[in-house]
Amino acid sequence: MNGHVFSLCGATLTALPSGALWYAAERLMAVSDLHFGKSDRIARRSGVMLPPYETMATLDRLEEDVATTCPRTVICLGDSFDDLAAAESLTEPERLRLIRLQAGRRWIWIEGNHDPGTVDLGGTHLARLEIGGLTFRHIAAADAQGEVSGHFHPKHGLRGGGQRPSFLVSQTRLILPAYGTYTGGLRADSTVLRALMAPPAMAIMTGRRAVAVPL
Image 1 (spheres, rainbow, N blue to C red):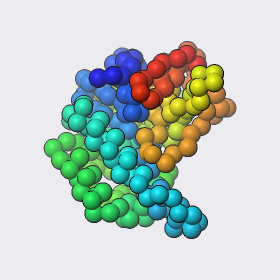
Image 2: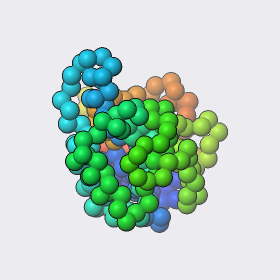
Image 3: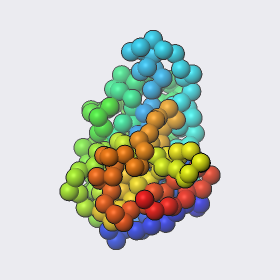
């Protein structure tokens, strides 16, 4: 498994190059901010038409990570759908792929700010989940310990190399990058992320391999 192994509050975790998180002791894989149906939501609200392939592209990566890790539990850390109507707009092939991915494993949809409610796609819907000594939620809480969250779509890059979706890791928390195909990002040196990531902290950049650099 071509990832970067690190520790958070006693848990040994692996940041995968795709942006997925693997927690081997719990056989748990987590992803954040899939934003399925973003092109549909943009077309519906603004009339701007984007190529409607982002859901299939995101599912391709998700299927590959599930096949590689064989998780017992999958946690989607919120904003899995660009809004609740986007969940209803999934095509039948897209819905069937999601159903197949859920078969034989526990599938958790964590509520996000884009999708603050249940969708009719199987799995369990929770505001947050505590497992293996870690708390999984969508938006970071200021005083949290052992927290895994998403929401901010963090990006980081080396000088002259552009910005890549990145995990941000401190001694008390982990923020996952956005996993979805049509997602922007917030720089790791932004005011809000600097306030959350107390030093010492690092960024783990995604891409062909997971690369860790200090913040």
